[in-house]
Image (cartoon, rainbow, N blue to C red; front, side, top):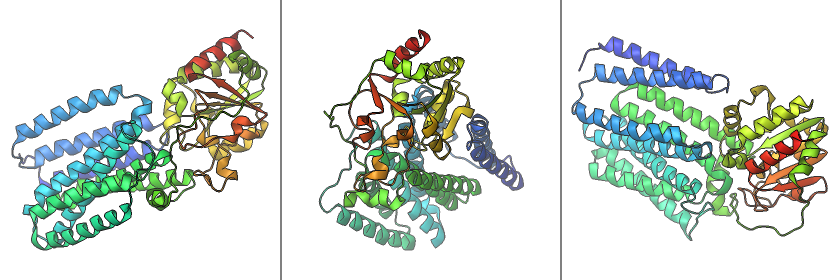
Amino acid sequence: MNILSSEWTTGLYLVAAVFFILALKGLGSPKTARRGNAIGALGALIALVTVFLSTQLDNILLIVATIVVGAAIAAPVSRRVQMTGMPQLVALFNGVGGGAAAIVALLELPHVESAGASLAVVFTVLVGGVSFSGSCITFAKLQGLIPTKPLIFPGQRWVMGLVLVAAVALGAVIVADSWILGATILLILGLVAGVLLVNPVGGADVPIVISLLNAFTGLAVAASGLVLGNVLLLVAGTLVGASGTILTRAMASAMGRSVSGIIFGAFKGGSTAGSTEISERPVRSSSAEDVAILLGYAQRVIIVPGYGLAVAQAQHTMAELVVTLEKMGIEVIFGIHPVAGRMPGHMNVLLAEANVPYEVLQEMDEVNPQFKTADVALVVGANDVVNPAAKSSPGSPIYGMPILDVGSARQVVFLKRSMRPGFAGIENELLYEDQTTLLFGDAKDSLTKVLTAVKNL
């Protein structure tokens, strides 16, 4: 139904675009993230209503039914997903977005009238296909459905090269002739390319690839905006593509790696690959009572949370321990690595759930000089982000990655399930140092025992 004039439609699209920009700004800080999320949702609602009121839509009942079914599936999944499952959820939603953009462009091909629009169709179909299949592979890796380690077969680079050459040649034919069957084959090539692109990536690099594929989806959506002549899609897709690119570069920088090295490093054997080997070297382990004594008689404690804290859902117990120590006059702060957990901001959100004040969360560059003044560094479920091999072992897969300098603290306490290596699959020499004590067990169970022991001091 064409209720809105073109002027009103353009104006409302502009309002929605401004809301999207304000949402991104709000999401840049934990203090304003909730408000930014609400503003983004309002912008999306304005855009959706504007489309319905300004366009002559066929099969409107089918469209509404599709939206209802999609919302009925996505809403409960989003509400129930645990913090540890957020990267997988992001990967799935990202893949669906890329796949949808590719299908829309494919169906729109018979209606395009210019070579420029046909080129946009080719780009959207290919990149959307890559984003969909690549995101599915990242989901399967993080969910443990397929091995996390890089999967490479002989001649893979040549197969990848042939797929890309075929895609370019086919794209040229489609631009010249709007060939529907050719576009369908191009979509299949895109799906194959996505699998070939992501399969060789493993270990700690997988979350970075999710962010990169998110940027791909944004670009595909922006190109679909050109195909459909929709300015809002163009703007929204560009914002997603730009923010995804910035996030990818930030994550790669935090890992001390280049984006090209992450994508193509596995072909040279340089990707971080997970391992399941457990070391049998002797370490110094202690009881919860011993750890409580170290904490209770310290003046300054720095806590380093990691993925193990999230898996154990131990953030509330951790927060209670912090409050107890502060009541005893002990200064407690948190040191947060940029990629602690599985994605940027993971630890900040987790600790915010437990009402840990944002003021005590300090980023890596800010907290690193303070470890030498700390009596105890309490590492909970983190390994790779404190591993000194990143500084001292040029052959290590994580060499060059900036780390939290917990080794400078007078005492270091690791809370670990076992001696199994972290996500990067390499041993941490800090575990064997004289200043290090290990408390084995589930993080929540260990913290509960330590909390009880501290209260009994």
